[in-house]
Length: 357
Ligand code: DNO
Ligand code: MN
Image (cartoon, rainbow, N blue to C red; front, side):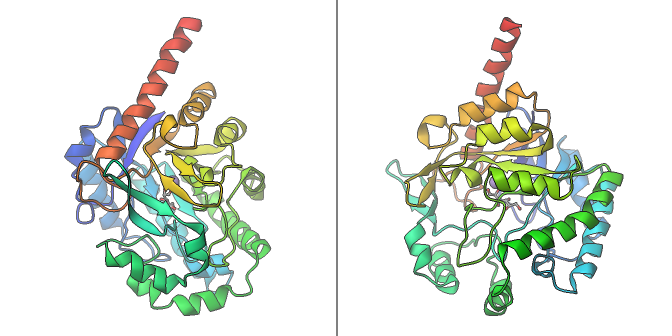
């Protein structure tokens, strides 16, 4: 398991690379060019700049999260070919600086969605919270306004420039069914996966978060059966998964450890985090520790260990603790603790394994 940490870039992240380097066992940063709109080709100078910054701190840049997919590709519009062309050029450039894995998602309109970015917990920490009922009765614009009232940050996909076109986007998705989304995903994969393969890059789709429809939009990367279907769309080792335990774990019916065992050789990137579910669709993000949430993180790490996982992993969202001011879910402290929990479990399994063998 190769440990990494998500970093939003020198101008975009309060956490310096120096601090990331101080977390035990972290070898690389998971990065992106967040200011480049989805669908645009990434400039080589910008890519090289991140590579140089990371090099200076002895961190690798093997994993990119995300190269976002333009809505026209998800919608299957005729303009998609140009955006796929740009995507391909970006893949080729990323390969030049040694990138090994590209994470992306295929969620219409929004990336991950929560109803509260800083929900107060009993211990004084705050965390990302999702309240199902609230989402049912609120229009997306209203949710954005409530959320941005108490935060300088917004969720990915909820940027003001995008939201200006929200009504248009919803209109375009009006008649798009889940089956259409599957077809459009297949079309994208058939063009992109051969290029990834030629360039030594593995693609890892991130599951939908939460793993069910929000605001009536179709969502398909949600459970084991659909992951299986996804992998068969283009049955190539380069067409793989970013298996996110927190996203999938928001549905208590998903058994993530079982997915690790089933899809082992197609998991290129592991997102490991815990959530506490309440049975009605609500969930709160907790510390990574198994006992704190509803997802059995110990069992998931054990599954990765059993299958001899040598891919990339990162702690995913963390809580906001010790008074840290940070972007929602991406503070240093709780994710640092997350790394140490994951190593604690992994290292003890490693030791026990040796004793047994
Ligand atoms: C949620 C996070 C997401 C993820 C993107 C990937 O679990 O990991 O923000 O980064 O959806 O495209
Ligand atoms: Mn994730």
